[in-house]
Structures are given as C-alpha cells and as structure tokens.
Length: 351
Image (tube, rainbow, N blue to C red; front, side, top):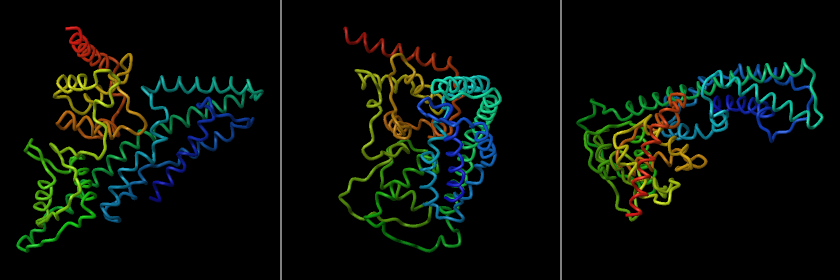
C-alpha cells in the first residue's frame, strides 16, 4: 500500500492545514499563515490518486489481499470523504469557503491575533484554491475506486475461468474447517459486488454456493462436517454476523410497521432511488433514520436482507454515489410518500 499511504499522507497534511480555518475548535496563533497556505497549495497539486491503482494490481499481489485492501480503502480515506460532505455545487461551495475565512479572521481577532490586508488576502486566496483542488481529488477518489473495482472483477474472471485443456481431469480437495467462515465471507462479498449472477430467485444456501463455485472452476468442493453456524446467501445477499436489522435503524416507535410499509411501498426501487429513500428518512422532521459512524455498509446489508431482493450495488448507493444527482424535490417527493405511510400506521392505532 506504499502509493496509497503516500498520497494519503499528503491529503492529511492538507486537511490539517485547512482545518485551521474551517474548524471552529482549531486554534492557531501563527501570524504568518499566508506562506504556509501557499506551501500547502503546492502540496495538493502533487496529489495524484491514479497512482494508488498500482497497489491494487491483482497481477502483482494476491487477489485475496487486494480485495481485502479494497474493502478498507473507504476507511483509509474517511477523513477526506467526510470533509465538506454537504457539497452541492461549486458556487455555493466557494461561498462557504469565503464564509470559513471570514469566521476564521473574526475568531483570530478575538484572541488578539490580527492580520494585515495582504496576509488576509493571501490566506483567503490559497485556502479557497487549495480547497477547490482538494474537492477535485475527492471526486477523483470515486473514479479511481471504480477502476480498481473493474480490475478486480476482471481478475476474478481470469482466476475462476475453467481451463479447457484440463476439463477432463478430475480434481477433488476439501475445505478446511478453520477456513470455512472466511471462505463463505469471501464468496458472499463477491456476490454482493455482483461478481456472479443467477436466474433463480430462490434461497441460495451455503451448499449451493459451494456447488456453483466448484462448477465454475471445474473443481469439486466437498464441505466437511462442522457444528459452526455458517452464513447463507438469500437471493444473492450475504447475512452478516450480528448485524442490526433494518427496523433497528428507524427512529420511530412502530419500527417494524414502518419497515414493512417501506418495504412494500418501495418494492421495485433500487440504486439511486434507495439512496433517496434513505436521505428522505434522515432529513425527515423529526429524523426517522440514524446510520451512525461508519454504518453505511451495515445499513446496506440490513436493507438488502429485509427487503429480500437486490437493491443495487453498494457503490451505487453509498461509496461511489454522486450526492449532487439528488435534488431537494426528489427527497420531498419521497417524504410525501413516507408521511402517508406514517399516517396509515398512526390511524391504525386509533381504530
């Protein structure tokens, strides 16, 4: 992860500097910040996230290690992803940056740290332009993730593609009990990320997965007896261990009833529409949904499992989703539907 960590180090240094201005809880008594902002502006110009692709090359590393690192990439770049997460469009973004500087100057003056006109202009210029460049880096992050993901899909196909020259050879090996949970977790993750597809809508058990995976590789997989409870995949969705159910995320007294109503109302929505539903619940007054820190993946799994169908890829709903594609009108339209559902539930209490 050398290239990834190198780029991440630069990003964090840039964010450390920017936080001096935008974070009201960050205090700095340096009266010569202009020059330091100029230096950090040069640093952000050196960030090239496309360089991290080399760390995720399945040809140079094992597919397993690359896949596990890919799962951790959002966590590594969590600080960047959370920075200015309410970004809508560039004009409003620039206005917000100007407000950041104004509030910073006022805060500094309250501590008798005053800047001359030239110093103020320098801080403002480089803070705004550094932030705009960093925003571009943030946008590039989603594109780079997509490139890496596509390379993983391609690598998985090469690895699992049957070797026609050896199709007549019968190979048998057993699955070690100690590795069973890890094996199923990997297969479940591959299903979740759409590495495979099926024409069946019936329950797919762990045994079905073994058979399908074995057939794909022209290899027979034999499951050894074990008393350990293994996860199953229902309609291509993995069941995570000790995961919260969808109703658990709802901030409403009749959680189960609302969850069922949402499942029935939005029975065909997927991808962007599911994200709008989530935003509509979060922004409802009062809020009807709470995700918590780093809870996107768990919520995604919970909705998949509760709705008992494929709701779209994780990247299409969370990690690679373009927040700007949702309008206020989209959210309000969904909130009207949700308000109606709540009205029906409340009406049922009085009858």
